[in-house]
Amino acid sequence: MPESAGGTGIGAVVLAAGAGRRMGHRPKSLLERDGEPLLLRQVRLLAQAGCARIVVVLGHHRQALLRVLEPAQARYPSLTWVTNPKPEEDPATSLAYGLRALPPDTVTLLVALGDQPLLQEGDAQAVLHAWRTRQDKVHLVVPVHGGEPGHPLAFGAVLRAAVQGGASVRAWRRAHPDQVAQLAAEHARYTTDVDTPEALERLAHEHGVRLAWPA
Image (cartoon, rainbow, N blue to C red; front, side):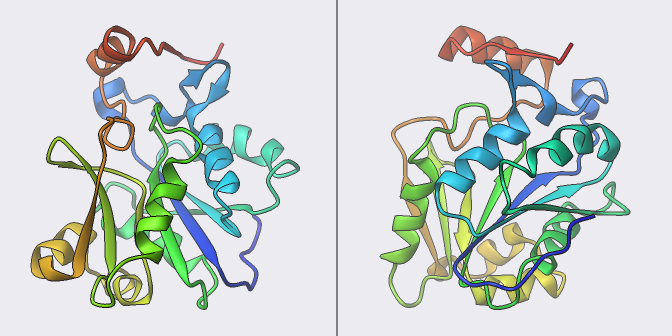
């Protein structure tokens, strides 16, 4: 398995450890948009945003995801991965594993999901811009659409230490609302993922985007 190396700048964690229970126990992040697995689409967009290191957190479908990640390393030298040995536990543990795999001096951290089919080039950059232009007291930037929080999130050392210490981002947000900034979005790209077959139908009906399972 590739090892994380030193570096500063922007690091990203892509969460892809889930079992996909509501999708028939299938790996959602391998659904393809225009022939490209959602997981690799996410990696591509994060690389375009300038991420110096991208860590994918694996779990239930590790072997299936490795079959697309390993060949992709030639295209994305910033790509690496770790495995959560107990992905059925609190989802916050997967994020903690991903953060620990990033260099300790990483200045800015993005957290994305492995099954976000609508994100486009420029969306991660908008989150990063909101992070760079935040007020001093802000330690977390969350994109929001229609009152619903989305991904990718952006944060730095304060929240990283809290998560690696066992806290969840959700619990930290509730405990520190004055340290959270919202990026208001007019679109649903940040808040759309695919958890169920019904979600795939809505995606096609509402956005004209059709996903397909790999052959």
